[in-house]
Length: 253
Length: 224
Image 1 (cartoon, rainbow over the protein chains, first blue to last red):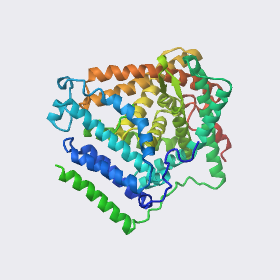
Image 2: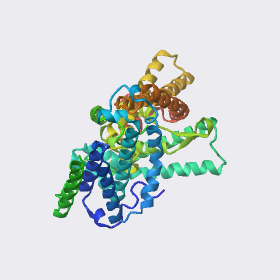
Image 3: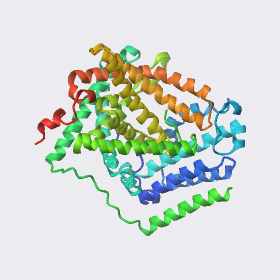
Image 4: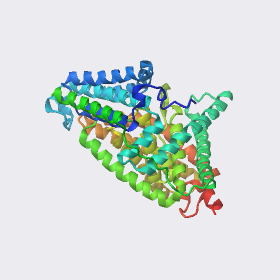
């Protein structure tokens, strides 16, 4: 288990990595929202969104192979859902796509619409977690009125996911060293037992963590995220980024 | 079943966010009351368990493999609302950390897998328990059936949303999605049954339906 299996390359040093994580979240989320709301005819706009992503990728020195490899895990599933689209008649769909009526007439156009938007969004999310440390992403969510309790839970998740996965890997290794292959449904019982033990160990770990926290004087107070104001450079980056996105969106109409 | 960005219409995404946000805030309030201040580490660590459990692939018929969803399991172990919270945390991490499921579709994904998955799993199970005679073998059958139903129902809602967004006609996507998940659901049923029966054997006190909320488990005995 590696410490960076969620946010690999987020500890690099580059102008993009140095930007405040709140700015990056707003920018990348806006990019996805604006991209999803762009009508498919504006091919130039999608090309430019992609160009922005490539630029960020280059500046942040993240290996392109890493992004491609991570996106390859997701894209086959997207393709499977998307493949329903071109092979159906428009008259068969009960409801109209909210984009425009003639998009419904052309199933291939709708197919590309969905695929391009999904692809750009996936690359955007992968880029976001490659340039921002995951705990920074979580903490920054509090700036957007995300419930602080949920952020605390997510932080505990992030802190213990490594321990739990290590535990699961040790158990799997023990199974494999006893020549377990897991190739038929009968083995579901074995995997179920493994997961049951893993659950009990996790649950009891949760209880122990709580007791240990109490022993160290925890009084039920939540982790408070300190909100420091944005520095000038970060605000400038945010304004330029959002302006660029809006310009692309409006210009391409 | 993780719907990416760009597939669903804006209205469905907005509705998904509204419903999920409502259920999550209800779950947070309930968890606070039910588990007091130990709920934060407990839910965080249990969510980490579900995430790790989802990485275990199990063989489905014909050489394909599926992975565990865990919504019914989380609901049966810790109650439907807490289960919802746990699945939401897993889905948020999968979205932000792995781009698995889109950010605009996050609310809808939480609705399908968290709300529908947990509530259907839990209430089908408790319903069956009321109807059927109370013995361990019957209990485990009820667990399997409700785990299978929770996966299939989640996929049914997923295909309804795709159809309502005009992506594909219902009569095509519904049988395909429900069919695939009917097979994946068998693995889910086997594993959920195995986990629940083992937990019932060793720590019956942690099971949601076995305890009264005021005085439970390890901690209440130790707490001063």
